[in-house]
Length: 165
Image (cartoon, rainbow, N blue to C red; front, top):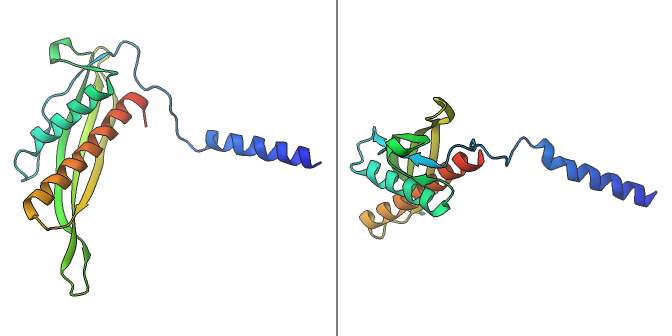
């Protein structure tokens, strides 16, 4: 009886991951081996952010090493992005109600298109990442936090493209 209950529990818990709705299946069709990533469009007032994010995304794909980043004429697929929002704001306050910690957030709209088939494989108009920092050195702190948020976004974009998450 105890053995049967233990087996039932094992089967139930073994099936739970199947019911959660996530899939680790490969999103990419087999013919996609090369990707083109044009410079992201910048709809914010933060100057130069489009170059930095594009570079972060290209570096993330290069590090991942499953898709070769190439020029448009050589590509099987294209990843387009638009930076729709950049915000810096207070995150936490000290007892004197002075800002203790700040937060930067970047929001992008991204589309991944199969150029051979002419169809969009995925699109997300609200990908976001944020990072916090203390304002001991206001400019360096914000820049460092922004780079960290961009690195997170880049990893999320690669994961979504390659693994379909």
